[in-house]
Image (cartoon, rainbow, N blue to C red; front, side, top):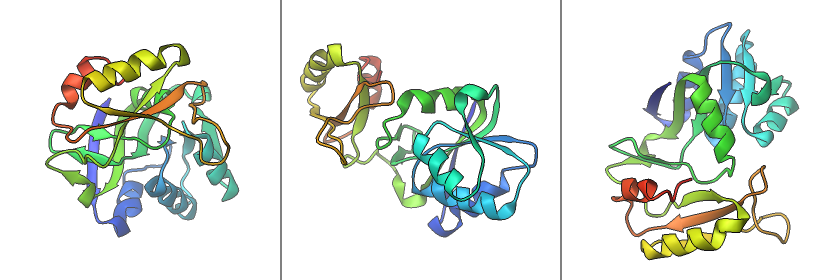
Length: 198
């Protein structure tokens, strides 16, 4: 898998992403605003490609505009995978914090020849933004232990709440989502090596 970070003006993100797509490719579309704009561009380009997505919401949005999009389970190989991103630093560490579909996004990345993050240039900084949390997917039986571990590393741990129902936010597998906040992400490698980012 080749990881590519594309940086360009917000008005041309979907155009430049579209230029990477060739007829006959299998393309994965993740989540987020920039990916949705790319789906619109794909629709207008009328390319002969196979689309898949780790995101149920992206699949629904694509179907609403007339694009056939398969789930990852039906795909054997991906040429290009596109996904949104909240923050990237100069060492190519990335925070992708909003979607809650961690497992499926990792599957799409592993299946793809190229994994392309679509984000505006201002989201790429010397350091990861401390306004963006590290979102962790946690199996319910170990939530207390993970929160305790995070707090011992000076992280502020918040269990995510659902936005449409009076319930906690969960991944498609039923796992809880916990946002870890830090005053700085300079030591994110240590956090990951301590298995916080399961």
